[in-house]
Image (cartoon, rainbow, N blue to C red; front, top):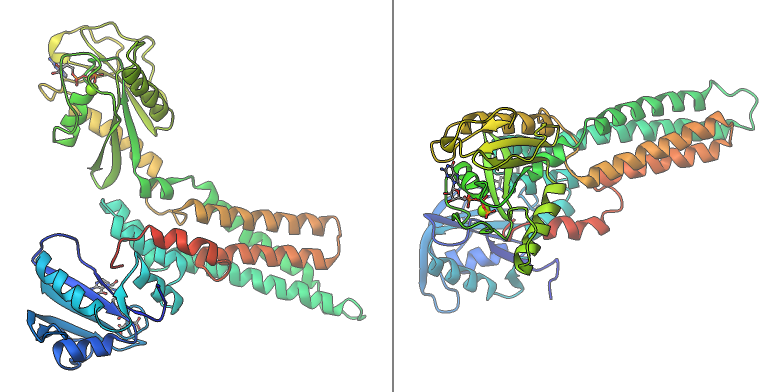
Length: 439
Ligand SMILES: Nc1nc2c(c(=O)[nH]1)N(C=O)[C@@H](CNc1ccc(C(=O)N[C@@H](CCC(=O)O)C(=O)O)cc1)CN2
Ligand SMILES: Nc1nc2c(ncn2[C@@H]2O[C@H](COP(=O)(O)OP(=O)(O)OP(=O)(O)O)[C@@H](O)[C@H]2O)c(=O)[nH]1
Ligand SMILES: [Mg+2]
């Protein structure tokens, strides 16, 4: 049903009512769509105001801006078109129905425009991922990282490494060709191994930088824990600036995990409210407590709350993953050694708490210069380093040059997975299925 030769159409702008909505079309039938719905092809790559009508009935559907992008110089590489419409549900629905009613035209699958752009060689796989991240970016730091990757920062670096490894491989193979001859020009294999070692070193530096790039995509997770009634939900609401969680004086109010995405000075932080930790006979509350413990175990940072008018859980020593917070400061004064002191009621201490979270997040997310932004990249680069290590140890053991060449080949191949030069089929569906429709 979903042929790659079909002409595809989709709403590219957000769903629901908007000022202007963009319907995108790509494929060989784009020309026919324009001829039948706007009476001809407008000037390429310019917006032209045109009446848009239903080809079946001739009824006017909207008066909008229309663009024509003849292939191969389009986003997908195919003939493509756009309708910039008045953004009502009715106009969008009518235009999409009209387009997809034409022969060999259908609604696009999620990510299908970008998939076609990739298959046409317009984007490499890491740029596709960067594009997906750019669409999902919620904060400034995420936008910068995504744009850098979309623009090829990772691809260029990986292609540089791969080119050098392919050169080293060529040297190793040349040595193979020379084995039977008396005068091997130089130590070709030795030179190949020196080059490979320098590539290995550069990749290892990137791998050693930590998971800042991956964390920046996902957000720095801060889990609020503590006994019932400590003021966890109240703190979440105060930091989120909205009543995301129910607050009440009854201990055991929160059961489900509640997540709020925040922008802390450009850094993505996911704040998580959890059930108060206590032993309980209520099976539903117990499930909440179990979930709270599990979530805290995977947090980047745990805020361990205790109210000033209840005994603290000693000791209150902060460590890399835990910050102790004493809540309800407006109710008392004995705060010695109980960590940061706040009152969600008066707002006291909240700025200090936010600064402490931001500082930890900034440390964990790195300087925003990471090349590795996904586990997929980390895997491929780790495989590359392992193959290069095998090549080096084979050389040390004076094993046949064929074996060394084979490991160099495997190393280059692992790098090729990052940009999608090799082994793409298994990752394509995974990457494109995370796209929204119209991209
Ligand atoms: N209206 C509209 N805005 C948009 C997009 C779009 O498709 N439509 N984009 C969609 O993501 C982004 C812009 N990205 C684009 C990337 C390449 C081409 C393109 O036509 N490339 C051709 C020609 C390049 C040129 O002549 O400068 C090519 O690569 O051959 C268009 C948009 C964001 N804004
Ligand atoms: N005076 C004062 N009361 C507070 C403060 N923060 C929370 N409270 C009150 O403490 C009670 C419990 O607050 P919650 O935020 O629901 O506490 P919780 O830790 O989420 O409780 P559970 O969901 O039951 O685990 C509510 O009545 C809040 O209004 C504060 O800073 N000062
Ligand atoms: Mg609560």
